[in-house]
Length: 231
Ligand code: 13P
Image 1: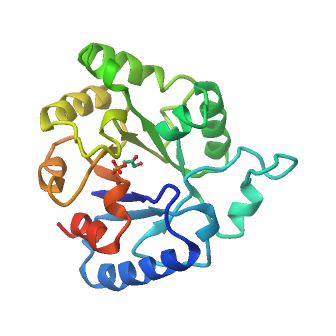
Image 2: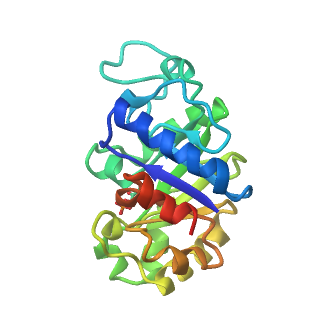
């Protein structure tokens, strides 16, 4: 299983260091060798962390080496921290930061060209979910527009927007159906995200085509994230 923690705009450099220290101590003793753990802290918390038990990635970056892009971070800045893992397409960036599919596809192509491991997020609104699986799939497929789905170093994260940070998880049936359909479209490891927590990790991780989870709220404390990783 893959366990990915997306801190979003939470944690400081100091609290991330404390978090990772605790995580490392536990994972060293108890991580299943086949599991993979990723942490996506805020950019300001990047540091010289090294661990064979988890990997640090970034939640976002700008698709340039360097240059005049006020407020953005490019490849040169990431290289200083040995970062080669990135989240692309998160619904918060699509909806709040207004990234278009075209922007996202450019980002994907750039980081693919630089051999990054990409966790590519897709997800539908409640309005689309209420129209049924066909509408959901047509929306999700549209989020692969411009994306090279044959790239060998990427993972897909299915995160229904209505399940993010709401405490409302998609049902086992909804996840099963959607992941089964997605596997027909893209043959990559498939994460589920949206209110994953200790109380539902067993049933979610038992779903056949769920290869891992992408976690927001429940990843913010080492204890609650470890409940997932060590379940
Ligand atoms: P929550 O786990 O807080 O619902 O967030 C999911 C998410 O958006 C992870 O990227």
